[in-house]
Image (cartoon, rainbow, N blue to C red; front, side):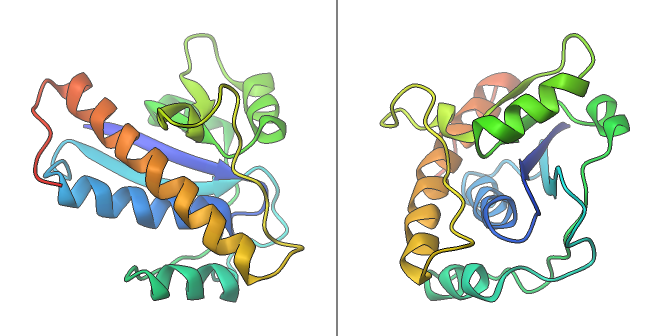
Amino acid sequence: MMRICLVCLGNICRSPMAEVVLRSALERHGLTDVATVDSAGTGGWHVGEPMDERAAAALSAAGYDGSRHRARRFEERWFAERDLILAMDRENLRALRRVAPPGSDVRLLRSFDPDAPEGAEVPDPYYGGEEGFTRVLAMVEAAAEGVAEHVARVVGRPLGRR
């Protein structure tokens, strides 16, 4: 079983949106029996809180359900429990890599989007308007397809239907 964790700062906007979208992509491609996904934040300010209302609304408008999400803080012990850790931006990538044991697979989420420029980040929409959440959703949808393709390659299974 491949275990994937998506990480942003507070786990109320980007990473939970990416978790919901990636879980849907794995389901669509028939990969839920070989991969699991969760999310967390590097900061603990929002632990236990639901997803930001604007993030949930953007997901809902696109047919996703993020209503069950509750924010969590990433714990160092999770490196041993996760195969792939995907940060939303370079700040969180650096924070994760500072504490990651050698051999941990920690990358930027958008590195799985073939159309994204090298080093592309998922920007934090928290201090902006609703349009920022819509842009973030498009970015995580594109990257989720690439992550699903990666999972299929790693487990040696052809990618299922689209």
